Length: 157
Image (tube, rainbow, N blue to C red; front, side, top):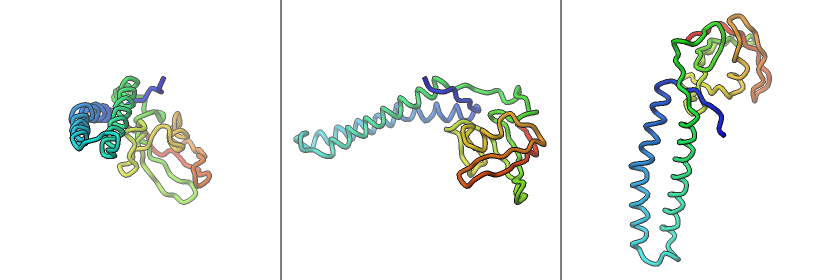
């Protein structure tokens, strides 16, 4: 059984939309590719047909993964979340105590993570270290580059 993942309304809607596209136009495009390859003759020596069938298998596997994600997805009502400590969907402003750099991240599900827009996965090392912390807390988090000490400056929704 897959782990429960928490989503914002936008994230859940995007996931459903992508799954719908995969099931409709995605399947239709693969069926056309298989039909075109089949029309080219002997299937036993038709690499294009083999590639199309393999693409179909990958496509169906992706659909199955997304359906599993949706089955375990939970929508979080951001208005009801406690902002006194860091939780999933929290926006957290932190400061690197060594160099004074401040960063703001929102903790989101794995599939919603996008570092460019400041969204990090709740399963990332930084997010795991921040979960449950309060404003003023200082934590040492192990990241690939080593250990970094952060101070929680602000928590919002």
